[in-house]
Length: 213
Image (tube, rainbow, N blue to C red; front, side, top):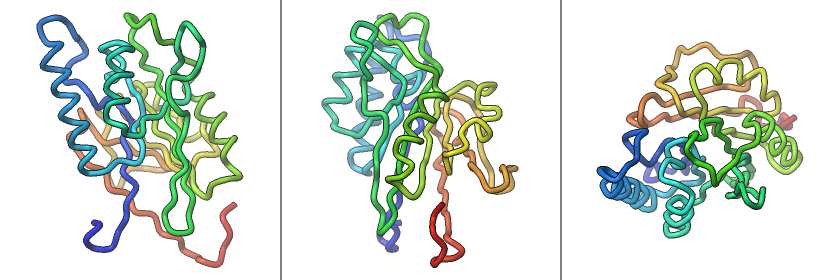
């Protein structure tokens, strides 16, 4: 795409690290190696924002903080907090620039593992809306990266009125070109199971003279 003059936003909605929901002594090393290999690939490709999801948390807070700091990739989460300090673990959003456009990207999850006591979470929808509203006057477009179960993804477009695009993970849903969308958005997309698919989304401005509202 870049060779053809397109400079895309590369985003990940979460559930990136592991191939299983059970991390134990028998698979901990191999799964950690897998996560590091994936992030090494992302470093080569370039990534604009990665949402912290269920799988990123599975191996505990120490592993998560260590691997994210080591890679320097831009991880975000608007609702995951340190249980001891009640402070956000990551930046809640990023503001990205493409040409004259400013794009705000906010991330959240509601799939916190029961076994993880060192991390707490605020409501994932309220957190996304809070920061979307906070940056609304600074940006032209807002993208929400949401890691949630299939049932909790239902109705997201109605619950996030100030977001333009919603990219989800956490279920096996996969969007297609003919998937029904809410008129005038927000438009919601999902990439299928275990990150096996790349979703490429192109948006065109029909009237270059019309202001963003």
